[in-house]
Length: 151
Image 1 (tube, one colour):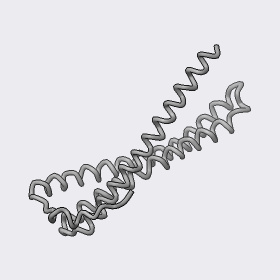
Image 2 (image 1 turned 90 degrees about the vertical axis):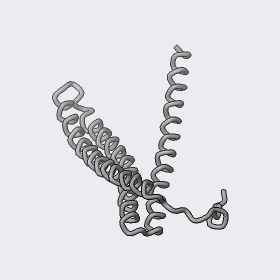
Image 3 (image 1 turned 135 degrees about the horizontal axis):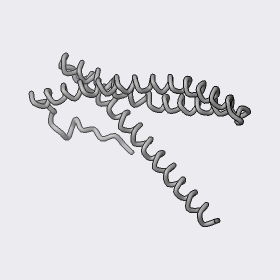
Image 4 (image 1 turned 60 degrees about the vertical axis):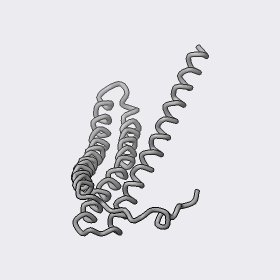
């Protein structure tokens, strides 16, 4: 796939005052959502360690005590992986919001370009994540169908 050079085919793009207002509002909401996503990531990390400990303690009190350490370790790893997966969209969104606000405040096209690059990264990440998630759902559905057919 080749990059298209739009600078020779499209006249210079300018933002109307209303467009600037919309982008400024967008930057505020994007920053809020980015911060909330970082908080959510932090909560996932806390849950990873606390739920692992709670699970280990709970299982140790039952007849499944031999499974307590491995189960809590698996649970901790799963939640930490979820936190890592959740961190990157939060980072891209926060950088987008910060750069967008900075570009509007300074009237700087290069910073605006960086903001759109972060937005592009966010959408690519979410797109790939969606494809992976849908693939897992489809594989799970096929596995369930095959299990029912074998019964």
